[in-house]
Figure 1: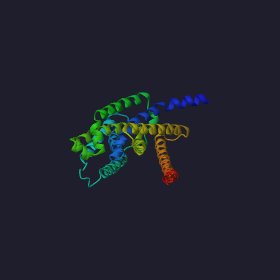
Figure 2 (figure 1 turned 120 degrees about the vertical axis):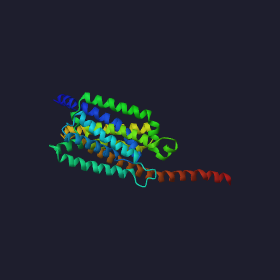
Figure 3 (figure 1 turned 60 degrees about the vertical axis):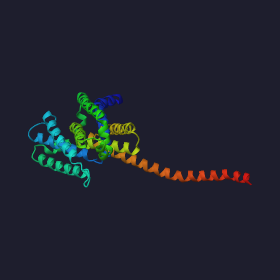
Figure 4 (figure 1 turned 180 degrees about the vertical axis):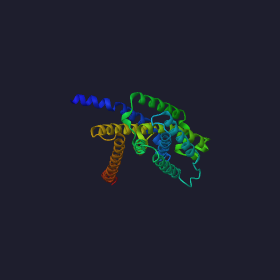
Length: 306
């Protein structure tokens, strides 16, 4: 009986789990960029814009799984990429995050308006938010992995301007990089990833995969390779725990994984607090011991001096 349950469980979750790993691979990397750029909500705004495009396609009669729906969403994401690339202010009187928030709010409101006119609109809205990752197949995972691999290769060739602009757009411009052009390429590729991911996992899960592993990686610091490994490990662990909890407790998979991300981030934060508290306790004791050792070491020298 136990073997049957194990085999049945594996047959149910192996493809969704691999899809979660694919999502982790690309989103943890992109998350390091967007968190460092201080446009954390660009992902959820881009995802909402892509969902708006797909919703418009749904309203005119295309199914969510159709290529027409995908290209509607992709077109909306490209429009958002243009807005992001050319609204970066050199003087930064207004944070770009404010513009991102406005785009998200308008896109979300427009989606609600369109859904109110569509049959089964509530079901569509739920699908856009949490997705249906358990429905993916092995061929679907392979297609998405190839697409994200191509995006990753594109970022590898463009890594110098992308990382230079992420670190400091002002310095990148001084070095000769055309910031709006490279920003557009970055956000265009970002839009392709987000549009594809939303169709599989929904807006909320895509946001969690982008931001939470990147936060853990950036807090622990180190070179980019170390940060990527930390982000990938964090995302993979959340995927395993979330998928298992979803199946065992019969919960919606996307929402469950998002909640696991939140719990893991809280646990990570508590561990950091405990570590800092212990370090603060140990440091004075170590300093006192060092001072006492130096004082004892100084007594023979004083006697010899006599």
